[in-house]
Amino acid sequence: MAGQLLSRNFTELSKKLVDVNDIGIFTDADGTLSEIEEHPDLSTVAPEMTRALTKLNQAYGMVVVVSGRRAQEVQNLVGEDDLLYLGNHGFERRKNNKTIKSSGLEDAGRRIAFVKSELESHLPADPGIFIEDKDLVLAVHYRNARNPQTKEEIKLLAARVAGENDLVFQNGREVTEIRPKGVDKGQAVLEVVRENGLAQAIYIGDDTTDVDAFRALKHASKTGEMSSICVAVVNEESPAALKENADYLVESIEEVKSFFLWLVELARERRDSV
Image (spheres, rainbow, N blue to C red):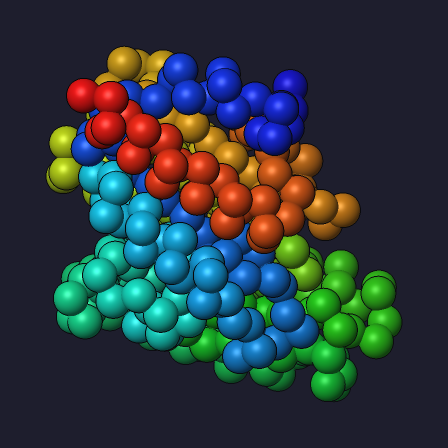
């Protein structure tokens, strides 16, 4: 069952929130904090969104940006240094301008490099198709492919070469990613929740990789480990699983910013009432 529109359910949501100091707010970047662009290099986060994140970080337990981008790259995109950034789906962590990478992935890195060469040899010659190399993650973008049928061919190719090299592939919004096994946004978020003793996690995302986080948080909630609230940013490109696993839905980046500012105001009201 799909989530409900958040705009109609703020009162219900406010009753679910625990003490603000025990809440971690986790957000995807592209498609959540910024619009999806033809090329990742064109993405920007509006200053108003960055200010909203800064206020959130001051009002709640912590704010974490969880992205498929490299950690430093997503920090540069967001423009706020005092947040925790999980890059490459959790393979990297960045805090206080220092990046820590997961260890023991040298062999996976070699397999990723081999897969990149395989993809470059077999991908159609189309200026609308390109590979984004993020060290431990490859993203094959095909939003602007000239032939729509080519997109399905790319998905099949990515699935084949990933499987042959013991890697994971995942299709998203006009992109297919290939990465090592063992880490996804769900596992990365749960690690942060546990390390920081958070009682509740709010997660906002827009694509297939964010479904991993939704599912992991919901499972942890069912076991009584913590509670969670999953918010999906939806549009005509949204995968069905995103809506099905969300508690609430928003329909634009502007609504995400409004949600953040509502959370900031709610925290202020709670503190004033004490």
